[in-house]
Amino acid sequence: MTRHYAAFDIETATWVADDLEDWRQQRPLGISCAATCTADGNVVTWCGRTPAGTPADRMDRLTARELVSHLGELTRRGFTIVTWNGLGFDFDILAEESGLLDECR
Image 1: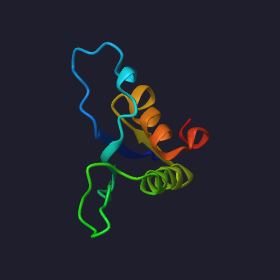
Image 2 (image 1 turned 120 degrees about the vertical axis):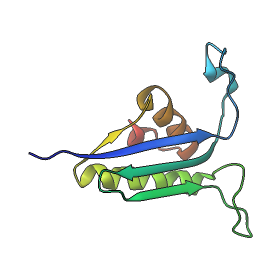
Image 3 (image 1 turned 60 degrees about the horizontal axis):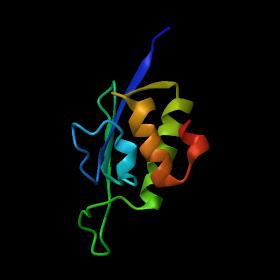
């Protein structure tokens, strides 16, 4: 059986100090941008947008929900989501920003 992988990462809108033991103290952090990349090279990126369509400092809830939907679609298609600290950070922040806690579990 061939495995299919998709990498996923977010960047927070608020800087988190490297020496901060509990980054949760600084919440909400927001998401400035995010990306997925499948093993076949399909890259999809997200960022917040201003009303004029230019990049914003922070992703809005609707865009965060679109990202959750995309990740769900990848898993339904058989992809394994690969992250660096995704369970302990990325999905936690995405759940908060999207309001879709159950979908991010």
